[in-house]
Image 1 (cartoon, rainbow, N blue to C red):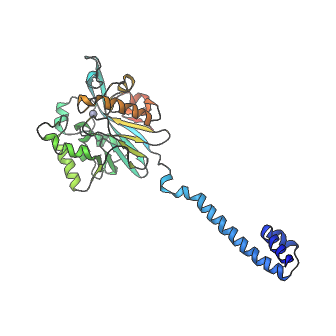
Image 2 (image 1 turned 90 degrees about the vertical axis):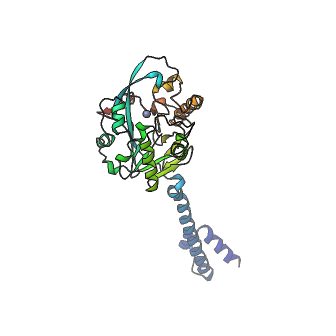
Image 3 (image 1 turned 90 degrees about the horizontal axis):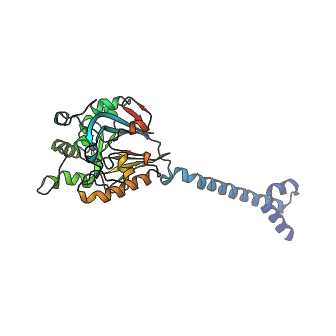
Length: 320
Ligand SMILES: [Zn+2]
């Protein structure tokens, strides 16, 4: 009995070694079958261990963020006054601003952030230079209008929303509260619809009935893997800005921050009402944090400097 226990114990601790030296007895046969059991358990344990180690790679929470490219596409330029863009700046100083859409590519998507404008009224009423219709401008980056899968609208002003009908297959993303306000209350007594084109609003409603409108519900919402929408800067009723994750991350501010000067001088962009200036400045600080602390990685809505800070060919700056 003692001999049998000793044989089993030896089998447990060193099956391979025991097989080499043990004589063939009943006890050895028992030990060998015990060894087979131990080996099967070891194999099972190894398989479970490998699966456990491999699991995080397949878990959705830890899935690798897609690496997106970001390009700023300048479809026009215009003369403006700094005091209208940087609240509190001295009156009289002029600046040439860029009219821009941003193209974000990756993970099988071609996403536009804002859509520009093209209707005659604005071409006549808003003097611009070097105008190229936004769909033609996007073609310069090698993307056909029907290849745009999504358009994220930062806010409803005509120069950002007015081009959505140029991209026939795109799903349009806008904040739920922005949609609610500008399709309703904004046009009622006491409402504020400055800079909003009724035709754009009708187009939004049409897209909704066609199942091509996606309403983003609030602040810090992931709308694509690695791309999150933020509110609170209040350029309009519920304007939004984007953080594109990656190495490094970038924030696309649109008009929630018009110029780099807003950031460096800690001055508000134009807001829905003057009472929103403080929230706007706070959100500009948040944008810098979201961009890893580097103000250059916050891309303002109309600053021509983005075409100097980043490598630019013709109308297109390669931000990332
Ligand atoms: Zn604008």
